[in-house]
Image (cartoon, rainbow, N blue to C red; front, top):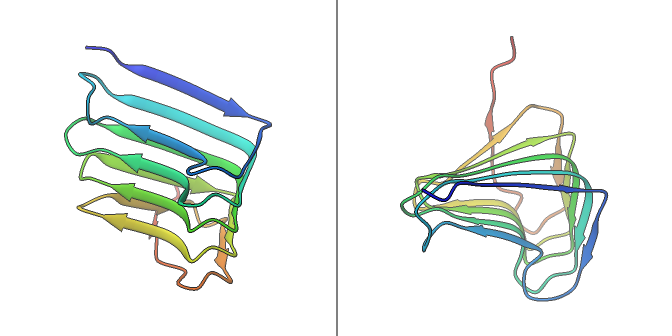
Length: 127
């Protein structure tokens, strides 16, 4: 398999079709990504997009701002999971959005508001 680990830190991503997209549609392995201290703003489609129809795509967002995109954070596919901590999702048409069994989880330290539709996240149990 061709597993991939990606780390994005201290970045500003603005404009274009999509900010960051992780797509396992044509891969044989999993994608694990960590995004921290990053701003993703003013994209035409998705700030952060996970596409995971048949292989795992797991993304952790920590101190990420997804602002003024069409969709702030989207997870599409039953193998996709996004976990958010200390992040802001605001000013988007849709804040957080899951489709086809995708999961979006929150550590409870996020702000998802002032989007046309905020969406919902599943809380992660703290120990």
